[in-house]
Image (tube, rainbow, N blue to C red; front, side, top):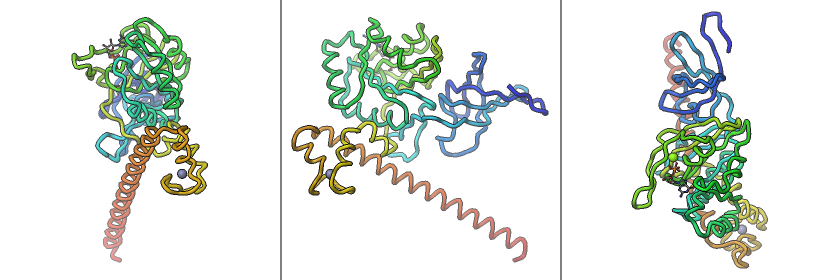
Length: 334
Ligand SMILES: Nc1nc2c(ncn2[C@@H]2O[C@H](COP(=O)(O)OP(=O)(O)O)[C@@H](O)[C@H]2O)c(=O)[nH]1
Ligand SMILES: [Mg+2]
Ligand SMILES: [Zn+2]
């Protein structure tokens, strides 16, 4: 902590919770304070989010976030419905666990989408299949996910404790684990099991088997062994933001595509297409190929929209600058 000549004190801490205009920040003494966000900027990505390291200035009773530290990684999603604005979910994450409840096993495509979002963050990625106690075929499902999605899988249960050591090993001291998955998947239960006490509210599954929204705000929790875990809210949808994110989630397909004869191969009719060859000999399933194409289309479409918006914003800025300059010249009598 530093004290400035005007009596304000400045210290740094980590955002444990984000709300519009206000954040909760954990300081070095383990106290959590509420600070207003004084950082300028209109892009939601510039606002401090859970996991950010921030500088907070205190002047009397007023606490304000003055600066957001550089982010090593950023878990973000495009808001569903084709918005070109990205929403930050968690910053400075080392590992993203895509959490899937074995009781309501989603389609491989849904998991693939979550994997693309997870890989786009720049963090390491795991699939955590939880509620193993209710599934007779947990091992088979795990093998399916590994072979079809190429992801490393942990099977666990917060009820029996099975696999929980492996989950805990995802957040060693000094590192941050983020849990990503749909509502009711079992994320908050994992946080509670890692912490060893009831820290976040879990919800009963509704009679129709669908989860309910209970974790209203994202929350970062410090673990007893020095690691951190971030419980993200059950998202109804996650849009992929970044075509490059597909490289992690579809490493197998992208590797094939890289060995096509033509660099701009469309994988349709081109000779020497390694992707079509793999489809023909069965090493690549049509399901995975089509999933790859669909997510790629979505990411590219969104990227074009984002680029168009950025260009628009920039044009607007240039126009208003030109106007200001013209006004200035007029006032000076030129
Ligand atoms: N049988 C069983 N139920 C679980 C397990 N983990 C979570 N649940 C239940 O699944 C429901 C949703 O869990 P919750 O942690 O709130 O999911 P979240 O929405 O992803 O945070 C709750 O009723 C939990 O009690 C588990 O390992 N085994
Ligand atoms: Mg929850
Ligand atoms: Zn090809």
